[in-house]
Length: 490
Image (tube, rainbow, N blue to C red; front, side):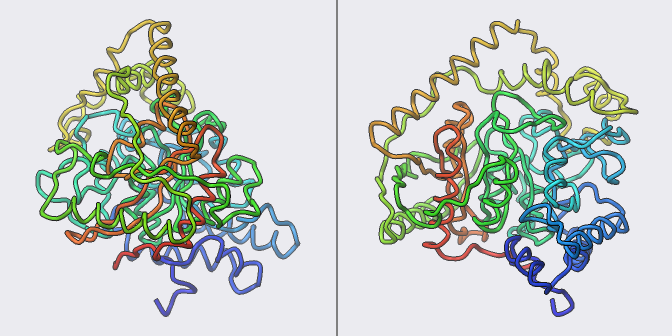
């Protein structure tokens, strides 16, 4: 570490921005530090799927350093590197591919940057690399391990390293949701900031399992042109980082809103309902419990409740929130939107692309089984279900409206009757399904680590539509009250 300009595992974006402003660092030094760290540690974690040529990055950093010298700052994150999930298209001249982890998209060239990528570059961010992800965000095979793709291989947790034999997809050694590469990149210290996308838990879970702070903004709040989405109904891109301040800085750029509330860091006007972790758990089919793991999580959760109360948080615990049993099928909606809206729109962004439909990808995978569907991921049942999802649009739209209105009814009733503006649950549960179905914003914060294997776990927090500021205020106050996040030993 003595050869590095700063500790890439613990230094956050706001701290780097301050050192840039003070002339203590240059963006070239920052980029070189991360590249050295990536070269040393990515081979054992497999978090990255595509990296631009080194000279392109150094030139980009040098240009931003010169702009700084000339007094032309693009924004508060000017000259700061970021890693993107491999579902944000980047123009071919940036030197990275966009594949969503699929071999069928290797070699396809995007004509232009996604709207969000363009916004970040206009704000002075440096696109350092693309992160591996669950192939097509999981729209391939139901029981495919998160963080695995045919093109990128398996991303591993820096805290746990080895995925246990016959592990469940959200088991204690599993690395997280589809934005796994983004989460691992941050906890391993490959960048100070990362972007993920979330359908249901895709940001929240890897944020939790890497002891990070992460935010899924309100569905529809951002221009997602040029970004792969599994669905338009659930999906939203969002920032992931090692501190609440970093998430706030990147969220401000993404949402084009001033999020610097004078109450930031305090519990003023925040009222929180915290659900019972004994009632909100993962089914054994998703996560097999080991001796003491469930008890360990409940113990840390209840310590958190007391810590927040003592810090001045207005908190109701245990808070009762109904589940969404009996509501329209969330997965069938995803199959239909993927096949009929999202994938066709995404594939039109590319030149030299050999596939133009779900059927083409299914055929490609069949014809390239050894590489595209190796053991143990020898199926593509979700792609086939999507390919055959041919309900009429009117029926699907009705199901979407029913699900959204019922989910909002459940959440709004909870917010109103208890007079709370935030709902808190465990990330190791289906709690975030409520936010996904309602289209409401949700965030994750770190809580503790399992005694069993050192795997981090965290909290999931839901707010009303467009109230990202309440979530960011919770993050800041929570970070001040709680112990520091766990940092993995590499």
